[in-house]
Image: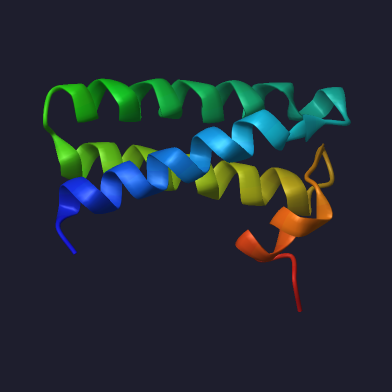
Length: 88
């Protein structure tokens, strides 16, 4: 798959997750801020046709969201949990 398509796919998933991700502990406020910042970076890089950087920034969003879920500062609807490393 072409990197442009992969970057767009990851960014679309991050956008969906950001709509559903709920902060349940104020300790996660900074993590959520990082997720939002990396998503803005991903959109910027994508608009500049820097697709590798856009993909990397989107993956960083996933990394921080996953960490926040493990730290129990976020919650996500049950149907989206399979997208993260929460399922055993």
